[in-house]
Length: 70
Image 1 (cartoon, rainbow, N blue to C red):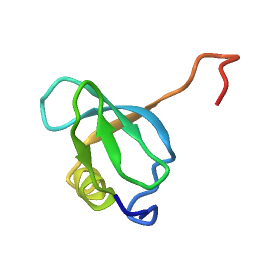
Image 2 (cartoon, helix red, strand yellow; image 1 turned 90 degrees about the vertical axis):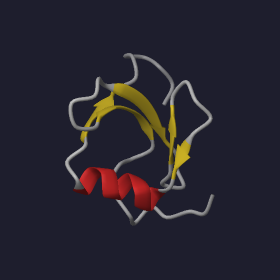
Image 3 (cartoon, one colour; image 1 turned 135 degrees about the vertical axis):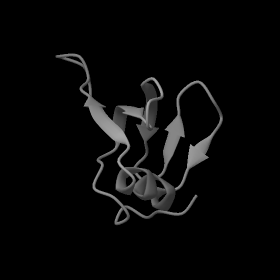
């Protein structure tokens, strides 16, 4: 996957996300801007992630536990 961190403003890390009325799921945003959907081998590009954000996808950052290496 190519690097494209300009497509959206999400920092690398873990996030809860929900589309429409679907239940929240976890995704891992990578340094290259794309994201892996947790529990699957599916990846979305930075542009596809930006499109989800533009259509109103709810995204909440999951902060690492206190004292965890970041």
